[in-house]
Amino acid sequence: MITTRTAKQCGQADFGWLQARYTFSFGHYFDPDLLGYASLRVLNQEVLAPGAAFQPRTYPKVDILNLILDGEAEYRDSEGNHIRVKSGEALLLSTQQGCSYSEHNASKDKSLTRMQLWLDACPERENPLIQKITLSGDKRQLIASPDGQQNSLVLRQQVWLHYVNLKAGEQEEFQLHGPRAYLQSIHGSFHAQTGAQEKAHMTCGDGAFIKDEAHLTLVADTDLEGLLVDLPV
Image (cartoon, rainbow, N blue to C red):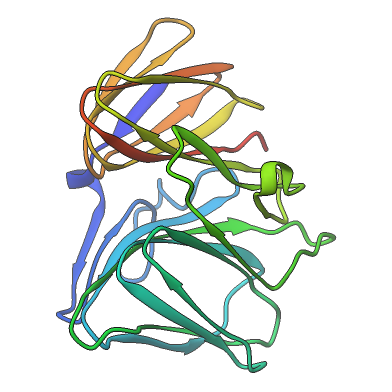
């Protein structure tokens, strides 16, 4: 089953220095039916104005994945760690109790556009505090997984996160690990098709809940950039 959630249905925010679209309840945007999906707590696409910053704050025990779509960001924590991440790279922060984290747009004249996901972390698992990966530009790339397979980022959760980059007319098939997944279009339009031949059309900014499907095929109508979050538990 595929249940789409269009970009227009998502929560919206415009604070001047920050423009945001929220898939799930976040900040001022609250929907009791959309508090997350399996271990996926947050999926936001946000644009920070030149020089804008999120001030230091603490988090629950989550893995925070930041996918930089345009611009360059700098991240710091209260332990003295800091790192810069630019367009075409993804950063994974493993939040720790008592540690605060900040983020700011490293450019004074260019906006920063990024997608951010929070995934619940298993209490008994640990991983590197800061990890970074470069997007390969391949049709599909496993960018995060529980065990770091295929040189992916290591998560503290049973989740497999794929970056998809298809040209118009191309297609790619995925075998899912369990009954749930979430699909997010970043740029472009495509059709998602399940093994039961159910189809859904999605375009820029749209998402979809995938339930009780073992296989998923994506067919690009235009050049496509997207994420598939495989959430078996």
